[in-house]
Length: 105
Image (cartoon, rainbow, N blue to C red; front, side):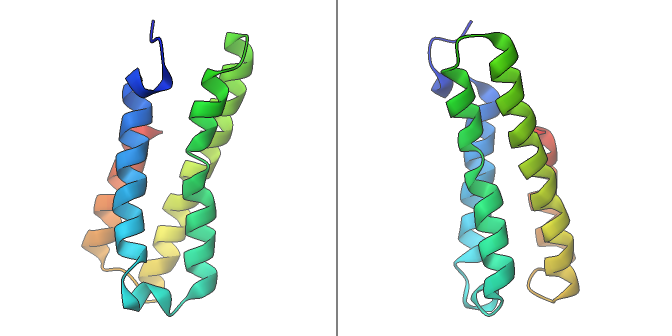
């Protein structure tokens, strides 16, 4: 059993995927669509649900937080599709990011 959330592979991968998404959102082409950028940022921040849930007293409570994080993860993948449609990301960029978030899910 992990002694801290930082020891969880899922948390480490979620942070790495979020960092990769943040790097793309920092590009000038992404910044032209502020609504999409904000939505992706809000969903990406929900990775913190993993950390928050880790501190809960029961596995059941932890699982609840993990489900919320998983829902936000799915939202990110849907928003990545919208980013392709709006020409903010290439198919390859979206596929790479979506693959990382799929692994976390």
